[in-house]
Image 1 (cartoon, rainbow, N blue to C red):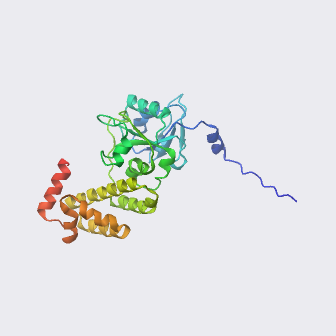
Image 2 (cartoon, helix red, strand yellow; image 1 turned 180 degrees about the vertical axis):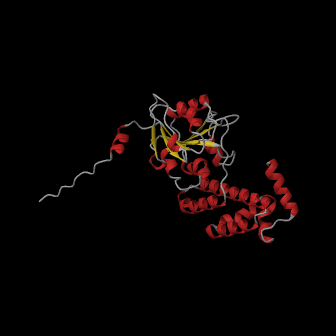
Image 3 (cartoon, rainbow, N blue to C red; image 1 turned 135 degrees about the horizontal axis):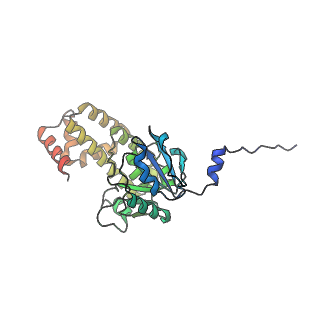
Length: 288
C-alpha cells in the first residue's frame, strides 16, 4: 500500500510574495524619527523594491500612492542588493534615484557609495591591500549580506561583506546629505572577534591579513577612546576578554598601537601616564 503525503500549503502572504518579481533592492530601514522624513527615500526607490522595517515608528510608514513597494521583516529580505538606511537621515532625492538606478543593473558583489573624490577602478583591492579605508557605506548582494546576521550594524554593512566579495564598484551617488556615523563599541568588537575566529580558516591569506589588521585598528580606537574618558575598569574587562578570545590579536594590538599606548596601559594598571594621554587626545582630535 502506497504512502501519500499531503503537500504543505504556503501561507497566503508567502504565496503572494513568491509571485512577485525579485526586488531590485531591499532597504533595511531603521525607524526612530518621523515617518514623513523617509518620503524622499521611498519615492526614489525603483518599482517592486522592498523595505524591511525595524524601530518604534515602523508601523506608521506606508508607500507613496501608485508606487509598487513591498514591506518585509529584516530576516525575509528578498532584494538583489541590501542597502542600510536610518529614518533620521536627510535623504537626497537625486542622489538616491541615481544610486538605485545604478544598482538596478549592477552585477558587482558590493557597491561603495557616497564616495568622495576620485573613484578608484578597483576599490575592493585597494581596501583589502590597505591603500584606502573601508567605504563609508555600501550596498551588498543579498547572499553576502545574510552572512553578516547577528553582527553589529557597522560591521555588517561595511566590513564583513568584503571578506568574501569578489568584485566591487564605487560611485559618488549619495543616499542622503549626511551619512550617519556609528562607531562600534567593545561588546560589538568582541562579537566580531568571535565570528572571525570561526571563519578565519575559510579566508585566503590576503583577506585574513586585512581582517586581522582591521580588527586591531578597531580595538586600538576603542581603547584610545576609553583612555581619554578615563574608563580603566571597562578597558581592563575588554582587554581580558580579547586575550581570552584571540591571543594573537591581543599581542598584535600592543605591538601596533600608536605611541605604544596599549603596552603602557597593561604595564600601568590600565591608567596612562599624562603625556601619553595627551598624545592620544591630540591624535583623536586632529587625526593622523
